Length: 239
Image (cartoon, rainbow, N blue to C red):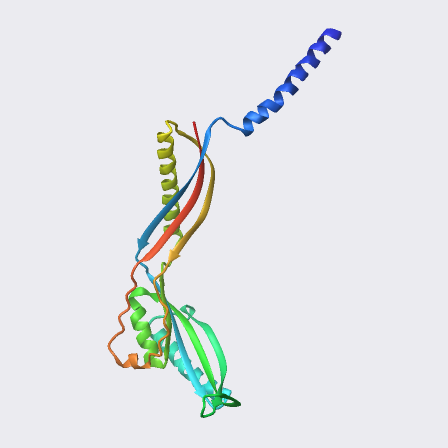
């Protein structure tokens, strides 16, 4: 009985002694680890326009300024809906009431108020092809600001995923090139980090007090192209 016990104890001692070495080998693999970045950029044609339009009215009282603004804003919405823009795609973006102060002959502002100014802006979502017509319709209905026009893609998910996949392929291609230069090969991917997928939309950012434009020919709107960029960081093991 004593001999089998001694053999068992000896085996346990051997296993215990070998365990730290095995763990150390697992934590410190013999393979070479390389970190690479992958990038990809693509341009696509936008199909959606976000147009921010504003109406500014002034009057001696807040109520009078509100009434004037409401009349014009209602007309704008009605005309846009007649154009085929659903009410869900016309939303209030900004509504501000500001006092208008009196000034003396030297340009110094006086504490007395001579009236009020109301700014009511809306964002209209429409197709790129209809953007110019939306601007003209709103201006003819009484809008006196075109704050911005931004172009985008209605469904961004597919194009962003495609750019991300290409960024991964770019990173793996770099890893293969490094491995070949070292006379090694990529055996596994250890980590992947997405650093972001960005969509840069063309946008007109200037504010136009554009009532005069309503009497001109149709406003030409050029959308240009949307640039999508993706970046990833990948760590691979070579051997």
